[in-house]
Length: 364
Ligand SMILES: *Cc1c(COP(=O)(O)O)cnc(C)c1O
Image (cartoon, rainbow, N blue to C red):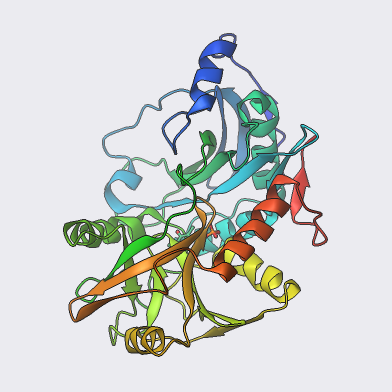
């Protein structure tokens, strides 16, 4: 299926994009995922025909049949990546090919057709190019791209659908931390699990988030910002935090939970592996239990913990709470290694630093 010829995107832009002043007012305080740009890209897939009807059209609601298969059986996948405005005014996206490949892996796991990598990138490029004025100018702001795909076939029989819609929408994103980088507090979820080996935890699908919400509510009730997931079998090995991967800093050595098949292989996680080594740290995958976390914090060997992902970049972890107790990382302030890695990644993404890895995809 990945050999389907790439359809060319037909541009049908809006005759009524939002007025400059209104767009500027939104960009002054965009928040996250609250406002959407003037356009969207849609590409259809039908059994026997493959990918077709690639279009850039005005952003608008969809009309959905009540028996749409996605509403009932959740064949739905998504991605998240960002476009950044660079000091010279040009715009670039960060590692879109990595997202395109992960999107294919998600499609395979959910028995959906694979979108060619070049169509994924072309769709993102088309939307960013058309809505270039929506890419914010300031510091850590960016335009968040949300590619996604879902079944459009109608019917209640349980099987892979024969029709899908791929779309890309875009939303301006402000600096995630308004008052500077602040550590989050986390709740170790010992009752609820997110994903199990052989399940869908390693791919980006809404079902993982649906499974997470009740634990997030529990975290809220415990006064914590985020949930940390443990493995589903022993409820012991640390996997992820909400929709972000975790790194444990042992002095000059940073360790991230290995990809066991139940956690999501983040593009940020992968990028930090490279950046950390460049900065002189040792970066490894490993297994860290909740007991290790607590003990090593207590004896001072585990100096910092941070979470990483596209939306919030790098977020320090401050206080950790579980049924058996509570502890705080370091002095509760963002750690030195965390801040150094965060700056290195953001500098590369925003064009303040060179990109020796060819990660930035320039759009002119
Ligand atoms: C998207 C996601 C991440 C982070 O991936 P990035 O590619 O770095 O944005 C981590 N965990 C989960 C569950 C995710 O959905």
